[in-house]
Length: 162
Image (cartoon, rainbow, N blue to C red; front, side):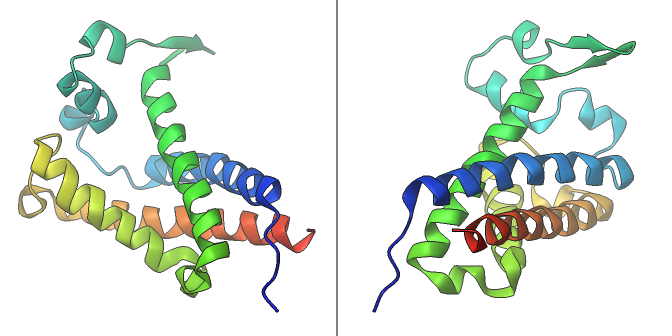
Protein backbone atom coordinates (compact mmCIF):
# COMPACT_ATOMS: atom_id res chain seq x y z
CA UNK A 1 0.00 0.00 0.00
CA UNK A 2 1.22 3.48 -0.88
CA UNK A 3 2.20 5.71 2.06
CA UNK A 4 -0.05 8.75 2.56
CA UNK A 5 1.90 11.99 2.17
CA UNK A 6 1.67 14.51 4.99
CA UNK A 7 1.84 17.65 2.82
CA UNK A 8 2.26 20.25 5.62
CA UNK A 9 5.20 18.29 7.06
CA UNK A 10 6.68 17.69 3.60
CA UNK A 11 6.56 21.42 2.78
CA UNK A 12 7.81 22.48 6.23
CA UNK A 13 10.70 20.01 5.92
CA UNK A 14 11.61 21.54 2.55
CA UNK A 15 11.51 25.06 3.97
CA UNK A 16 13.66 24.10 6.97
CA UNK A 17 16.07 22.17 4.76
CA UNK A 18 16.30 25.08 2.33
CA UNK A 19 17.06 27.64 5.03
CA UNK A 20 19.68 25.48 6.71
CA UNK A 21 21.11 24.40 3.35
CA UNK A 22 21.34 28.08 2.35
CA UNK A 23 23.35 28.80 5.49
CA UNK A 24 25.66 25.88 4.71
CA UNK A 25 26.14 27.12 1.12
CA UNK A 26 27.04 30.63 2.37
CA UNK A 27 29.57 29.13 4.76
CA UNK A 28 30.98 26.96 1.98
CA UNK A 29 31.51 30.01 -0.21
CA UNK A 30 33.49 31.69 2.58
CA UNK A 31 35.91 28.75 2.55
CA UNK A 32 36.01 28.26 -1.25
CA UNK A 33 34.88 31.52 -2.88
CA UNK A 34 33.40 30.73 -6.28
CA UNK A 35 34.18 34.06 -7.94
CA UNK A 36 36.99 36.58 -8.14
CA UNK A 37 36.54 39.78 -6.11
CA UNK A 38 35.95 41.69 -9.38
CA UNK A 39 33.11 39.35 -10.42
CA UNK A 40 31.67 39.52 -6.93
CA UNK A 41 31.28 43.32 -7.08
CA UNK A 42 28.01 42.54 -8.83
CA UNK A 43 27.25 38.94 -7.92
CA UNK A 44 25.01 36.68 -10.06
CA UNK A 45 21.80 37.33 -8.06
CA UNK A 46 22.37 41.09 -8.34
CA UNK A 47 23.16 40.90 -12.06
CA UNK A 48 20.14 38.71 -12.80
CA UNK A 49 17.84 41.16 -11.02
CA UNK A 50 19.42 44.04 -12.93
CA UNK A 51 18.81 42.15 -16.17
CA UNK A 52 15.16 42.04 -15.13
CA UNK A 53 15.14 45.82 -14.78
CA UNK A 54 15.70 46.26 -11.05
CA UNK A 55 18.10 49.19 -10.54
CA UNK A 56 21.57 48.68 -9.07
CA UNK A 57 20.71 50.99 -6.16
CA UNK A 58 18.20 48.31 -5.10
CA UNK A 59 20.21 45.20 -6.00
CA UNK A 60 23.25 46.56 -4.15
CA UNK A 61 21.28 47.64 -1.06
CA UNK A 62 22.85 46.56 2.21
CA UNK A 63 22.19 46.46 5.90
CA UNK A 64 24.80 47.00 8.58
CA UNK A 65 25.69 44.38 11.17
CA UNK A 66 28.70 44.55 13.45
CA UNK A 67 30.35 47.09 11.16
CA UNK A 68 29.86 45.03 7.99
CA UNK A 69 27.70 46.05 5.06
CA UNK A 70 25.75 42.94 4.04
CA UNK A 71 23.80 42.51 0.76
CA UNK A 72 20.24 41.81 1.90
CA UNK A 73 18.89 41.60 -1.67
CA UNK A 74 21.47 38.94 -2.57
CA UNK A 75 20.57 37.05 0.59
CA UNK A 76 16.88 37.24 -0.26
CA UNK A 77 17.55 35.67 -3.68
CA UNK A 78 20.01 33.14 -2.19
CA UNK A 79 17.59 31.91 0.48
CA UNK A 80 14.59 32.09 -1.87
CA UNK A 81 16.44 29.85 -4.34
CA UNK A 82 17.56 27.47 -1.60
CA UNK A 83 14.14 27.27 0.03
CA UNK A 84 12.40 26.87 -3.33
CA UNK A 85 14.63 23.93 -4.18
CA UNK A 86 14.28 22.54 -0.66
CA UNK A 87 10.50 22.43 -1.03
CA UNK A 88 10.74 21.12 -4.61
CA UNK A 89 13.12 18.34 -3.53
CA UNK A 90 10.99 17.46 -0.50
CA UNK A 91 7.80 17.16 -2.58
CA UNK A 92 9.51 15.42 -5.50
CA UNK A 93 11.14 12.98 -3.11
CA UNK A 94 7.72 11.98 -1.80
CA UNK A 95 6.29 11.54 -5.29
CA UNK A 96 9.38 10.08 -6.99
CA UNK A 97 11.65 8.49 -4.36
CA UNK A 98 14.40 7.80 -6.92
CA UNK A 99 15.17 11.57 -6.82
CA UNK A 100 16.64 11.04 -3.33
CA UNK A 101 19.32 8.66 -4.64
CA UNK A 102 22.71 9.55 -3.20
CA UNK A 103 21.15 11.67 -0.43
CA UNK A 104 20.50 14.53 -2.85
CA UNK A 105 24.08 14.88 -4.12
CA UNK A 106 23.23 14.02 -7.77
CA UNK A 107 20.20 16.34 -7.55
CA UNK A 108 22.42 19.18 -6.26
CA UNK A 109 24.94 18.64 -9.04
CA UNK A 110 22.09 18.65 -11.58
CA UNK A 111 20.92 22.02 -10.15
CA UNK A 112 24.49 23.35 -10.53
CA UNK A 113 24.60 22.16 -14.14
CA UNK A 114 21.18 23.59 -14.98
CA UNK A 115 21.91 27.02 -13.53
CA UNK A 116 25.70 27.56 -13.65
CA UNK A 117 26.50 25.73 -16.88
CA UNK A 118 23.30 26.20 -18.90
CA UNK A 119 20.78 28.85 -17.80
CA UNK A 120 22.79 31.73 -16.32
CA UNK A 121 25.45 31.66 -19.10
CA UNK A 122 22.67 31.54 -21.72
CA UNK A 123 21.10 34.63 -20.12
CA UNK A 124 24.47 36.42 -19.99
CA UNK A 125 24.33 36.57 -16.19
CA UNK A 126 27.66 34.76 -15.82
CA UNK A 127 30.35 33.81 -18.35
CA UNK A 128 30.05 30.62 -20.41
CA UNK A 129 31.18 27.54 -18.50
CA UNK A 130 34.38 27.32 -20.57
CA UNK A 131 35.22 30.92 -19.56
CA UNK A 132 34.70 30.40 -15.84
CA UNK A 133 37.82 29.68 -13.78
CA UNK A 134 38.37 26.11 -12.58
CA UNK A 135 38.08 27.35 -8.96
CA UNK A 136 34.53 28.49 -9.67
CA UNK A 137 33.52 25.06 -10.97
CA UNK A 138 35.17 23.28 -8.02
CA UNK A 139 33.50 25.56 -5.46
CA UNK A 140 30.09 25.43 -7.12
CA UNK A 141 30.01 21.67 -7.82
CA UNK A 142 31.12 20.74 -4.31
CA UNK A 143 29.01 23.51 -2.77
CA UNK A 144 25.85 22.34 -4.54
CA UNK A 145 26.55 18.72 -3.54
CA UNK A 146 26.98 19.65 0.15
CA UNK A 147 24.03 22.08 -0.03
CA UNK A 148 21.60 19.45 -1.29
CA UNK A 149 23.04 16.74 0.98
CA UNK A 150 22.28 19.08 3.90
CA UNK A 151 18.74 19.69 2.65
CA UNK A 152 18.25 15.92 2.26
CA UNK A 153 19.44 15.24 5.81
CA UNK A 154 17.14 17.88 7.30
CA UNK A 155 14.16 16.58 5.32
CA UNK A 156 14.92 12.96 6.30
CA UNK A 157 15.20 13.97 9.95
CA UNK A 158 11.90 15.82 9.94
CA UNK A 159 10.06 13.16 7.91
CA UNK A 160 11.31 10.40 10.19
CA UNK A 161 9.38 12.02 13.03
CA UNK A 162 6.17 12.04 10.94
